[in-house]
Image (tube, rainbow, N blue to C red; front, side, top):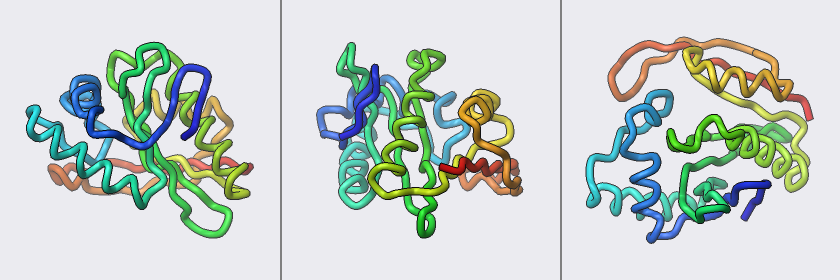
Length: 169
């Protein structure tokens, strides 16, 4: 479990399916810059939460809970790329929880976690070039743009630029 001023990052529970479906998975605007498809109904959400729980057993990924409400409002995670180099694996918050400073809290928490727990020397942040809010967050925390790579969205084949930002720790 990881904690920020307003949030708790912890492993998903089956009972989270309704919150995360209502707050995140059903919203096209949440999936827009991510690599997942919108969840269409309650049954799909129940299957998805089971897959999420299984995935989280072997990956350093978390459900994001708002302390004030206790609701699952997003997800985030990290992975090791090489010795001393870690990357976020996606940070996503529901539309009602954006523009509250929660993304900043999550990213700072993940950076701190990798630095303290794994002695990380570099942290990588990936974002689509069109995601202005994500780019602004990276730059505000001192990340520098290292590269751009053209990619195809696996959901629809549309091309986009993936930007790779780096922060030396």
